[in-house]
Amino acid sequence: MTGAVEMYRDRALYTPSRRQIVAACAAIRQQWTPAERRRRTVGGRMAVAAGAWSPPCIQTAHCLARVRKMVAEAAT
Image 1: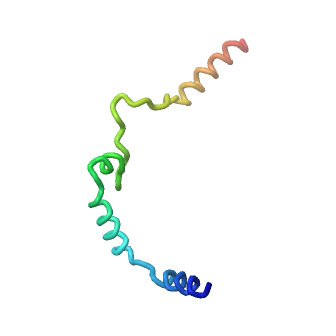
Image 2 (image 1 turned 180 degrees about the horizontal axis):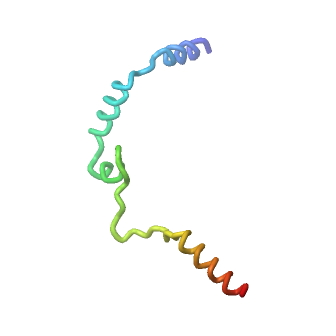
Image 3 (image 1 turned 90 degrees about the vertical axis):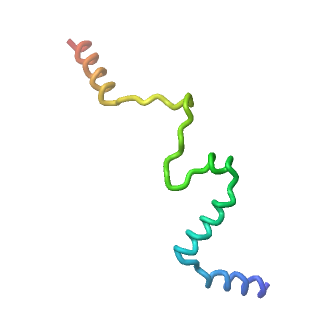
């Protein structure tokens, strides 16, 4: 058990710098296949496929104004 503890202690002492992390990530991205490059996004928004379904966007201000008008008309 002491061997495992020493291994984890040595691992905890090593903390890579930001530049080392960036370089390692860049090296990993260079190994991606073209299919992986299309699937993954780095530093940007995901591409939206043409014709892809997206949920409806409801403009609540317009909807609430319409409801208030209907309620006001019903009350009079």
